[in-house]
Length: 249
Image 1 (cartoon, rainbow, N blue to C red):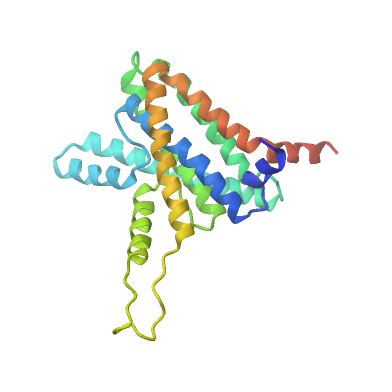
Image 2 (cartoon, rainbow, N blue to C red):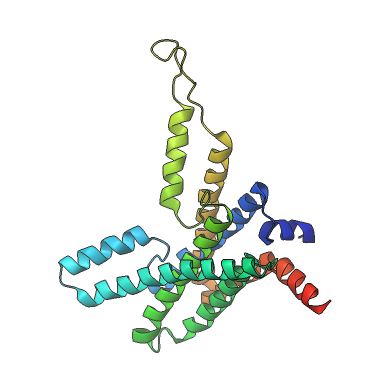
């Protein structure tokens, strides 16, 4: 990828085009990690609505241990998002080029850790499965917060429910019949077609990433996280290199 293209994706100077391009890459990575993680630990780790609902069910049924496991997953997602905010604001205060790239580097490192952690799941399942779930939830929270921060909450990459809701809203506007009856003289209802395109592409890439992640995990196992980490490192490398070059001058 050209250096300026990568700098626009993850550098500190943001553009709407750069935000949307980065969101597409991260939606693919999130879908792959989520689907591959499900095959590893039998739990989706980006779906906090489902986790909270499962916590309520298990509490009502008296399954306290399972409920606490869900609480651990929820808190891990929360801490991941908080960690992203800490890193971004730390980098911003120091005027780093990598204020958004550094959290991506952390996510890549954690995906590599998850890949190596997988070798122990079968031998020490009681310990490593809960640890893997919390690690994946942390990663999902971290990543979702990155795009939320840089796009000022306009785009998210793991929250498919919200994206599908927004697609439905825009489709409702698109198919609204602007008549000359009671609506005469009132502003036309118009859909944001550009928003429809970006949301549709994010949902589609999350799905494609899910297929790739599931196939990768099924065929080559936990090592399938390494290509995902490589994508993130490639996306983040240029701003990190810019900071290093400035420090060396």
